Amino acid sequence: MVTNDFVERLATIVSPKGLISDQAEMSAYLEEPRGLYRGAARCVVRPATVQETAAVLKLCNELRVSVVPQGGNTGLVGGQTPDESGDEIVLSLQRMNAIREIDADSDTITVEAGVTLARAQEAAASVDRCFPLSYASEGSATIGGAVSTNSGGIHVLAYGSAGDLALGVEVALADGRILSGLSKLRKDNTGYHLSRLFVGAEGTLGVVTAATLKLFPRPRAHATAFVAVDDPAKALDFLHLAKHELGPSLHAFELIPRIGLDIVLRAGLGAREPFGDRHPWQVLLESSTFDETPADDAMLALLSKALEAGLVRDAALAASLDQRTAFWRIRETLPEAQKHEGGSIKHDVSLPLQKIPRFLAEAEAVVEQMIPGARPVPFGHLGDGNIHYNVSQPVGADCAAFLARWIELNEAVHAIVLSHGGSVSAEHGVGRLKRELLEQVKDPVSLQVMRSIKLALDSNNIMNPGKILATKAQRRSFDGCTG
Image (cartoon, rainbow, N blue to C red):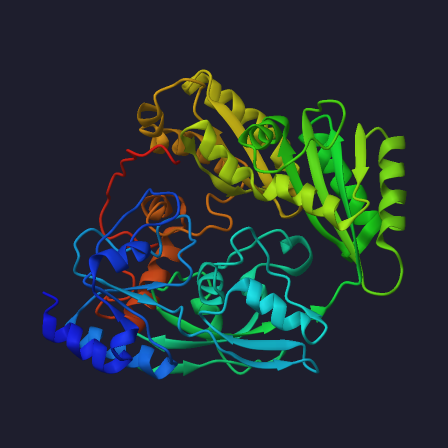
């Protein structure tokens, strides 16, 4: 039992302003964005330093109190949400928001876990550098959460995911020790790369309290184009041509189906039709230059070759910052726009690039067979093989009945993904949503090694228990219509 005395001891560590025990104030920390999981907690603890974080964990470890680390609470698989028992505490890193150092010479920035992606980007820009990790929730998503989930975003094609950008991390361990792994070094072969253990671990091994991250030259110009294609196979051919013509300056390559564009336009979120005619598929791509060379010239040359080769039907090149923003609004508001269509069953998958067209065709056939009238809305990062295969409910269907088939449809779609050598979790993580699924798809030896590492670093299983590694099979129910 978590007693009032325990809460008072926590308040002594973090000060009263670092602790929330009022149920109404805690509410924002207890539910994940999609509404699939809502938990309970004895309190929310908000340490301001790594020492406070370590002291909180030491106390919780001694008393066997489970801890759920949380960053900006933007995760989509329930990894940051406490269970329903009310016995756990939420450990929010939002007060740990200092930018400790920017080193333009080594092209690194060292920030605490509560710094948002947007703020890290602004800090990098202040020294004429670029921090490239970017996605729609970057104004709320934090560095600690991004590293802990190894999040991706729109620039993985050019820069990699959060784990690729992290040179080192500082971690508070379950027993209160502090692992000081911050480093600016690109090369350091002095034993195990311990920092990598905590990338994608979702707070199950320790709490990431700070990270040293790579910075890059700041682009001087961008070229952004919205392109119409016949089908995903043509989009893939266009991607290969874009890589050949633009090389490392190609920073984003996003696939959007016509149904996705229609959903965005219906939602009234400020997006506009990019073409005069309707086309079955669209690609949003962007390139950058790092000198005074105009980015548009190379993009125009690429589009000309693609049109001549019959790879694209039509193309619109952004002529202003406003038009560039309008193009990206279509892509970035698509998940939000789907909420206006009723329930949506989600899949975050990755596949070898050449297998994506076949996967999309096979998955569409399975969806139609299982739920006639259901509307697949596959979109996302074609450049790195990550597709968000969302399925909206049939028009006029009962939302609850549709969402009740979440697990069944997941199993069918994931079976196709696995048959093509893909992954059932590309960038959102495992959390609670996919923990039982991991038991089915992960190599048994890999699972054994993961459990051994968990036992070595968290022998009392206080760190985010029930996330990633399932303790027992639990079926999920979905009774809301936000999808």
